[in-house]
Picture 1 (cartoon, rainbow, N blue to C red):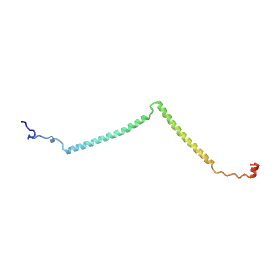
Picture 2: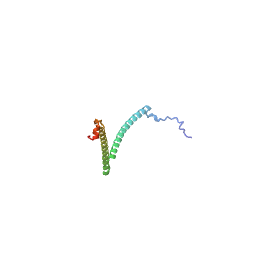
Picture 3: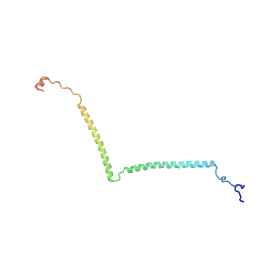
Picture 4: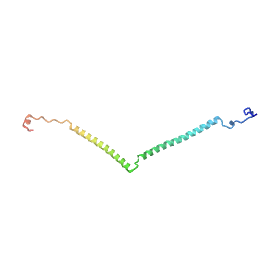
Length: 125
C-alpha cells in the first residue's frame, strides 16, 4: 500500500519563511503608486501641450493656399469684402448727408410780407 501524503508527520518549510510581511508590501505598493502617478502627470502635461501645438500647426497649414489659383481666389475674396464694406460705408455717408440737407431745408423761414391787392392786379410785383 502506498504512503498517504496527508498523514505524513514530517515538517516541511512553508513558503512564507522568506516572504515580506503585509506592512512591507503595502509600503512598496504605495511607493510604486506614487511613482506611477508622477510619471503619468509628466506624460499627460507633455501630451496636452503637444496636442495644442500640433492643432495650431495644422490650422496654419490648412489656412495657407496650396496653389497660385487658391492664393489669387483668397486675395480676390478679401478685395471683394473690402469693396463691400467701403460701399456700405459710402452709402451710409450719402444717406446721412441727404438727411442733413433735408433737415437744413426744413428750417423755419421768415414769411414774405403780403402782396397788396393793387400790386397783384396791376402786376407790379
